[in-house]
Image 1 (cartoon, chains in turn yellow, red):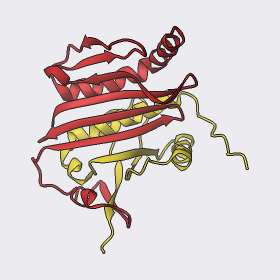
Image 2 (tube, one colour):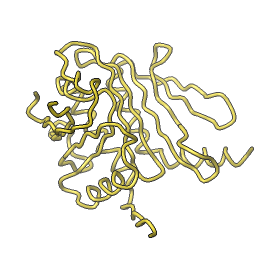
Image 3 (tube, rainbow over the protein chains, first blue to last red):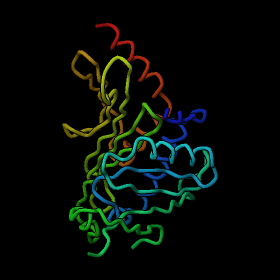
Image 4 (cartoon, one colour):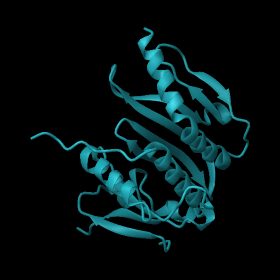
Length: 99
Length: 133
């Protein structure tokens, strides 16, 4: 069966880079968060107020995976032009299940 | 744990990942990859101590029909002790352009901002260089 082709939203790279930039600024302003992050991970950004980008980023993950790396999901409410200080992502990090 | 960080339990994690909870102040090396669209990705690596970035690499990687795999087309890093941008060529040595920003936290932010503005141009010119062989 043919694989479903993912339709990219307009300016998808710019919008994703903007979101990554916002998350990086948040992390640099809150360095204690780094202690909870894995050393290597795939970052998947899920903007709460942009369903088109949220669905697209999940479809990318579904189709291309994370090359075996742990996945960190960042739920973020951000609009382009918004002050990064007001951006507070919720980060969902994997931790090992108890044996 | 920080109030904005929530654990997700996975059963297939290795020991390395289980050692992620380190006390404040310890130097960390963190690397993440971010698929921006199907043929364009961002890789970010940095060393961090007490909230200050000691070293970083931000690199844009692309896939092209002419060549197999992911190719780095532009890289910002702090190798050689200063923040700079390496323009990467398919058949030649990289060209270094010094970033006039001393603070590495600011330089990393500037690198991501620059990619947001210029990524299409960087990708297009690399594609053209690839065809010139």
